[in-house]
Image 1 (cartoon, one colour):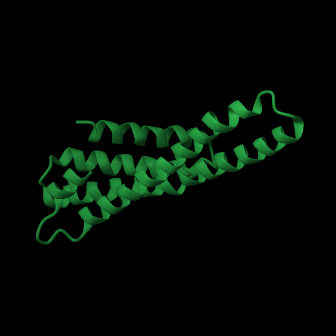
Image 2 (image 1 turned 135 degrees about the vertical axis):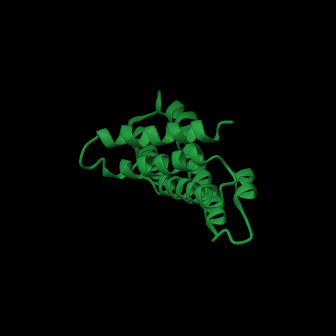
Length: 147
């Protein structure tokens, strides 16, 4: 993302590349917090659960449930805070791409489309189909920045 920031910034860039870089950093921080919380449950709590006395199992379940809830609040497509930073990053970089024309225009349109699809995932309370719409935005993001 730093490379994209450097390419898109210009003398009068309106700040969009900086917003994209900042929200991208927050996105990856929240995504890492999500992954670390999930790994804590899988690597530390789950092995202790097997063979533990009943009162210990209840405590382990409570801690695991809290950590998984924290992980999903940190980053979950269509539910977590980090996913909003994902949407913001793509929107800022996509808009900057279209305004500066330093990158191919199709990449700006693709970034805006991925941002919009990621935002639609927050409508999953209406229908679970929107989760898959948000995942499509994630796939577009991977396609866009994988080279």
